[in-house]
Image 1 (cartoon, rainbow over the protein chains, first blue to last red):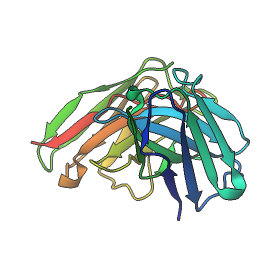
Image 2: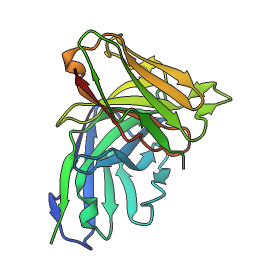
Image 3: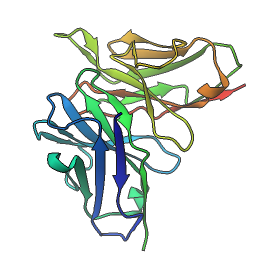
Length: 120
Length: 114
């Protein structure tokens, strides 16, 4: 059974750096074609894709946020970490991680999400 | 960047009736060498993460009821629910994955019971 779980702080202050961890099980990120993505959703708003890391350690970022994002993986721990610098109240959102496999090209299993509020 | 535009923004359909949601991309998401449309549909119920329904524009994810179907090619796509059930109330999103990396979502369509 494939599962993903997001973890990180519920509250960060403006200008701080956010670090989120996605811990997964049921698959290996060293398997060819396997990827993990981060997606966020501000309250009452649409989904926004943020970043992706693949089995070959290739990394991709949203063009609008790429200067603030860093994604990395620890295959031995089955974890993917996303950092976002210079947090702003507009970054308040639920942050999801999801598995993406090349056979479907889309995100077939999602975590439950973690809610992050940016406020002083 | 490819922009995805869904219509309508909200939709109310009677139980047992057909629901149709449209998605238009600002450029084609049909990849010639594979002849596949790089387009997915997701369903999100309140308080839940999104759920993958359809990929490659028309392939139903395992376990998704066959009343859900996807169609279209190039820039115009449709998600159809053939006979609306109460549990289908949700927000539906299309997303392209034509470019590397996976790309933008549509703005979402809220489906309610009339």
